Image 1 (cartoon, rainbow, N blue to C red):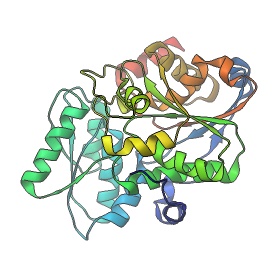
Image 2: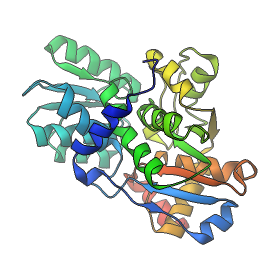
Image 3: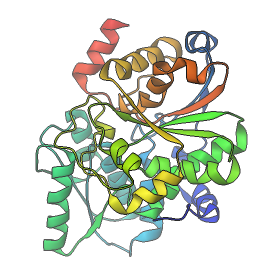
Image 4: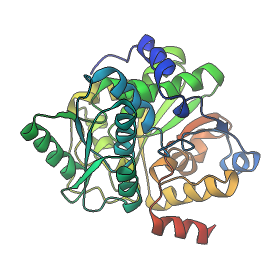
Length: 318
């Protein structure tokens, strides 16, 4: 995956993806802008059946990349698995999702609710992915890797189409896990809004993607211990790094405290419950106010599936 994604396919995806995931609102708040020192445009991707943007790419993938009745296997921290399970149930496919032992129980419950067979394997997401790949090979099933399948990135890229078609902005901060969001939105903006600065955001305690993009090669880390489970990548997908480097100008890392502060700001100013990965873009703006001062900055609030203990802490602190 070296070339930017095809805009024609992204526009086709925008016509076929389950409309419940599309044309999401962009929220603004004057008090939040005053606190940030810039004008923030927050694309809210949480008011849909799975509470995250992952439904876009999963639905487009299932609609276009699978044979009739083909069963699939994936690994997930929770949100992509929900998106895939939801799309598979809607379109008549069996879906098995592998999760790590530390997976958010609320996300696991949602996987079951959407009809997935859930298997727990490994200590974290990347260990679960290894188990899922082995299981798919043993059972002769289709293994689906989020961040690798072009259709998944194309579905995520419809967010970029909506932003570019409807808004003007100087910069965008995008949470970076395995890269479907960055590949999709970045491909759109490089073509339609080439002057927009694209900033990819990782957690300081899960820096593998930052190290890899800066080095130009996959660099694994031993651990990925962050509250932002949706971007807790330990093992990057090497074949996607070239595309991801083309789709961003720089990669920044935010602390656990900055992630939680961004969650607090979203709740206080917009009434939005965002999970840590979903707030990572705003966290980057908060962390480097001088860089964004006086500019119009977009980000994507890409998930709202907060673990119970963290949800209680958010409500208590705010």
